[in-house]
Image 1 (cartoon, rainbow, N blue to C red):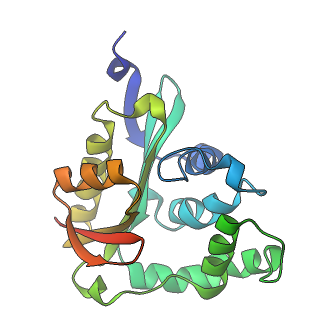
Image 2 (tube, rainbow, N blue to C red):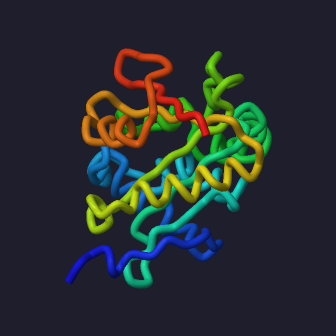
Length: 201
């Protein structure tokens, strides 16, 4: 049976929240399962999934496989405003839960650094104010679902009057880099281990 027939795109619902965390973990190692690299399986979701669903749920779209979430796209329309909200609302409790001096794996150390130092604002935000994260489990990959999720997200940004969006992707995730370039993203900045990619709406 064609997998596409079992996939459905829909808006986010609060009951999806725990699924976001699970998908974030299962795709958190350059698109592969990051479970072995985390002692606390909720940590990546606290940084890359949960705050977006809480802050701007209308920009979160779910890919269902049958009736179970198998992917998502989420993000924010104004990164600078979102970064202030993270620092003032979302991260304070997490800073108590994850002290800097705690015992963490290498990937967890990156997450904890992010929690304590906040979102790093880049100079290109004036031209690419929105940003996004998209993660899809293997069952939904290679089906065109990624393009469908991005189209829904782009349309929602356009409705808010947002001119452009960016994301950051690891250089080692060559499949994702190729996918984004095929969609029409272009390189804004290059870092040691990642690219910042932009897309004009």
